Every structure is written in structure tokens, then in C-alpha cells.
Image (cartoon, rainbow, N blue to C red; front, side, top):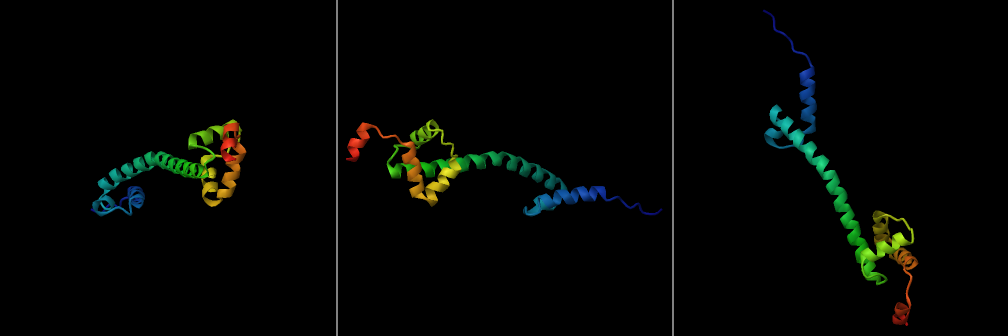
Amino acid sequence: MSRVRRGYIARRRRKKNRSLVSGFRGAHSRHTRMIIQQKMRGLFYSHRDRGTKKRYFRRLWITRINAVTRENQTFDSYCKFIHNLYKKQSFLNRKILSQISISNKIGFCKISNKIFKPNKVYEEILK
């Protein structure tokens, strides 16, 4: 009896799965059952950590803005700066503000002075 040659569909499916886990170590990139499990796990982590990455970057931007804001001493804290920014309807997002605060501190000072409306007590302290 002659040998039956299998089709290419299963091989193509396994090859596609194998390409997704090609950098994994040991059996995680060699055995088909393990490959499928690791692929599912990797896709789950990538989906979950997309949100985490956004969260971490937002934290970084807020920390940078807060540091420069306190350094300039126009505002006591980050939250007062952002509050006054929104009151003046100057819609610069945190990413842009943090880039300005790092690269161009004079520009950031101008932005914060434009937002800041000094009261009489503050003017007396400056004199």
C-alpha cells in the first residue's frame, strides 16, 4: 500500500504558531502543545500590559511636570498647576508639557507664568 502524503494546512498552522514564540527558551519554542500555551499566555500579557504601559508613562510625565513646577516655585504642586491650566483653557496634554519641561525650561516658565495670576500677597513677597 502506498504512503499517504499529508497536506500542508496543519504544517502551516504549526509554523505560524512557532514563529510567534521563536525567541522563547527550551520546550516553549519546540513542542507544539507548549507553543500553543505560551502563545496564548504571551498574547494575554501583551494585551494586559498595553494599558499598564500607558499608565506608567502618564506617571512619568506627571512626575517630571511636578518636579519642574516645584523648581520654578510659581505653583506649590502639580495639581494646582494642572487646575489653573484647565481654568485658562490651555489644552496642552501631559506628554507635551513634560517634553517642554525637560527640553525648554524657559518655555515652561513662560507657560506657567501665563497661567499664574499672582495675587497681592504673592506680589508683596516678590518685592
